Image (cartoon, rainbow, N blue to C red; front, top):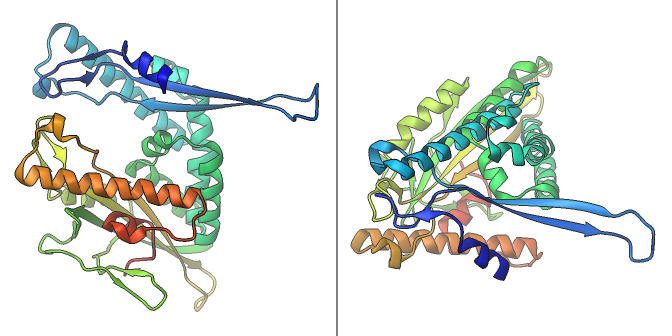
Length: 343
């Protein structure tokens, strides 16, 4: 931490119209671990790498009103993020040529990006498609613990990329029948809103006798990626956003996009139906009142955002430590996203 704090003192930040301390660069914090058997003097040395990234946010000149050096910085930030998006898309589509060289960012991370998608994301989604939740969760726990920095999962598990892989898998299968549905909810001030139902005033969590979460969220049946994205774009129009001192369109809520997959053997009329769930979350960022100067409704929203993120962190810590009691109930985010199934 001492080395990181010293390094951060010379990282490029500057005041912009949107942020008093705007990141003008991306950073990569690389941890290199070497290990060997203590009982083997000349035994092999194993080397592992872990890349933790802090990406600067994309910028729109129409909002930042940037000029001169700030404009140049913003253009380079946007270019590198665009290249990163292209590289992730090429990896998800199995392209032979990957444009790592188009940016210093992707060139430095070429091996890590390839390893993460091939070793982690694709196997996870493939397991989900097989309809075995137990197999999916086992692979997720193993692969996430072994390979994956969190930023990489957040970047690669984008809605369009996952949707493309799902529908491509369905198209390739001739011996199975599939039904794909999705639900989309928002958690705002610890209230659950159904983004697929504009008239909905809030959903109530119930539980069955086994403790599974029951949530009467609307589900939409989809046949292709375009339908998924169209529904999501329409739903995002009613998601809570507001202007703050730090951001003109700040997310005031968390969202959970749940994909429900049902599959069965095409040759068995009355055969079993396998059901899998995949939750993709978009979390609002934590907020500091000293920076946002929030008051009134914005202050209340920020407090609820921070509380739910704190609970999520505690739950992840408890899971990683193998605790017997997990505090899922302390927030609607953890109660809906990490437990049970919706109905």
